[in-house]
Length: 418
Image (cartoon, rainbow, N blue to C red; front, side):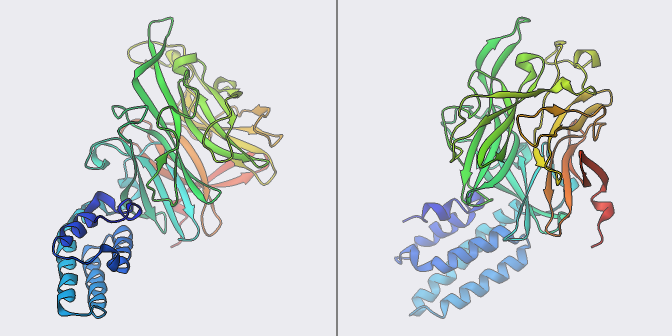
């Protein structure tokens, strides 16, 4: 008899699962009799990265449990649980680490505050060094109570075997939104084997799109809503989908990629109430080169797969409502000073716009793909990646809202008082 699926899915790397299955060979007792022990051990293993303290907690749990057992034989079974759990727990100690933000390899960072836990979750696409044992691309989370010290990585999603994109290409821009009591993971996938068209210059355009996954908690495991196709149009190269709710209607805002259409665009389309699919009527809200600071890639000397393409890169939408009621939409592209982060403004307060663009970006020199979140003490922070080249890391700035946009105050670390 195995652990119930919902417990199995909670256990990083399957370490405690292996321990319990090994212990079961020495016991005829049904696994449900150890429910309290399992849940306590799992919770401890997920959120405590100190190895010695973890052993102490498990030992106390098991000693306490053994007092309720009816015989010395059953007490011995408890000790066997301890033996096997401690044998496999070093796998956990490799999985959990105390990290500083600058230690985490990441592009397109996204931070979700979870008020019930007073904890922040940072989501990242896995890289070679952070992937699960299968080696498949996935999404991992890091957890912090102070935005300074992080635990992780915790694997929250892994590309399934029968997924439309396959597992030969990495994942881009994962972000998690809480909506109607569930957690939704938006992420961009690419299928290099599915050519949807050939450009006039002979460059193939492959299927790329945003998919939506769902889970009951921010640690996952996230399950794709649709295994067979992305949420975005299947004849588009699309990316960087994000969630926005306007007048009770959920929308996805995403980019139609410059690789397919040269001038990248920012699109909106309504989602079904359960976020299971788009309504199928994408509407362009603005072109990335509507912003005067955005420059054409070939004129900057930037090549795509060895080719000079007259393209304008569109990346990284994120929507935020200002206290004035106006909307801003983050944008990322190339300007005179490298990859840069900016925003467009909808003075109407509506996704449909019209959208206005500043003459200069908010951050340049390699900053990109930003989002905003509010700390538990009420500060508005911006997180983005820097530099744009590898290895990129997440950087946090404190920002001030104004009537027509936002202003960078300083780096978050410089303004810390704790």
